[in-house]
Amino acid sequence: MTTDAVVVGAGPNGLTAAIMLARAGRSVVVLEQANEPGGACRSAESTLPGFIHDIGAAVMPLGVASPAWASLPLEDHGLHWVAPPGEFGQPLDGGRAAIAYRDIERTAAGLGGDAERYRKLAGRLAADWDHLAASVLGPLLRIPRHPLAMARFGLHGVQPATRFVSRAAGDLYPALFAGCAAHAVLPLERPLTTSFGLLFLALTHTTGWQFPQGGAGRLSRALAGCLASLGGEIRLSHPVRTWDDLPAHRAAIFTTGPATLARVAGSRLPHRIRRRFEKWPYGPGAYKVDFALDGPIPWTATALADVGTVHVGGTIAEVAEAERLVAEGTHPEQPFVLLAQPSVADPSRAPEGQQAVWAYCHVPNGSDFDMTDRIEGQIERFAPGFRDRILAKHATAPSELEAINPNLVGGDFGGGSHAGMGLVARPRLTVRPHRITDRLFIGSASTPPGGGVHGMGGYWAAQAALAGSLR
Image (cartoon, rainbow, N blue to C red; front, side, top):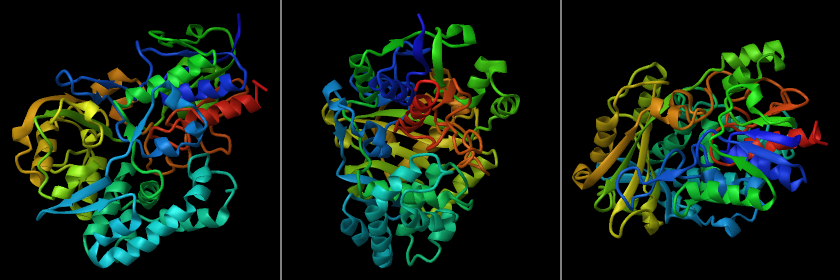
């Protein structure tokens, strides 16, 4: 029998693509090489029993905001979002910290002389978000539905992050912005890094930096349950190495990296596209450490105890230096560390009174350098006594991340480098980036809108298939 569509990969993008096709009445089969769905969106007791850590993604600012999931009954399949008291924060030396709350006024009040500057910026972003979402979460090379809002965003967003905050009165606001902009995984002196900072600030004051109760794996299980309720099928432990591993189909959607698609599809790809995909550039990798603690992190800035995400890197100059060194292929002594402490709002993640912590830093792609001590050192710098609270820890190097999920090539969480045209030409420069041929589509983090847990890459690939060979 021939299925209407086959989807390669059962991560959030693959499951979302399959759901959209099944909702449209098409038969769909999802093929997943692992023995459970989720890709990088899974959870496990990687340190000690009772401590639930996320394998890849942890905090998901784009999850609640995702248009693809807004109409899905994911709560019926066990998904519940958790909102921490504070969205994110960035500690500085001397026991100070810049902290972002959902409330703009509360956030601005903690930024000293930059309060009014921040109030105006955040207010405009929050007011524009409903108009911006359709553009920033989809293909960029198209006429925006709300050009004025997009123009305001774009005029600021093209700037380097260091320039955007260069006129700040103090160091708290630039540090807060640096933590958001560093999600670009680029030196903060590069153009377009401001766009990442603006995006994450807009999410801060609209839907917030929420995460699934019980761990990231709950989201994947909810998506899988939703697909099953629509009659879709997931085949686990089914790697796709050659075209013959695919069942007969009318359309194929790959939620893999471009290089994997090129290897499997071979001559079925146009020659120019195949050559580009085979040489797909990846960005820096991640070195990740899970910690089981006997109590909360002893932050010197005590308000950080109620914050879900902590950007541990110090001033904007220090964050910029760390990211610049990674881009140059070296390992910073004081890395920029992204840390999540979900136990502050989700007690199911650790035994009572204890805490499960997830942390990683950027490293050169494919690095085998052990960054554990440097990550711990950065946390200890702003939370003296942190090391004394460690009951157990589990480090995951870039090569191990790739072994868990082949999409994380060299440990790259983002599906490809953002350098140069990497933010726009994903996976190539075209107004229809998710369509490869009439029957072949791609919907991974290597396509718009890029990395992050939102399912939008899969959503757009499914829409392209429904407008093409599956009409």
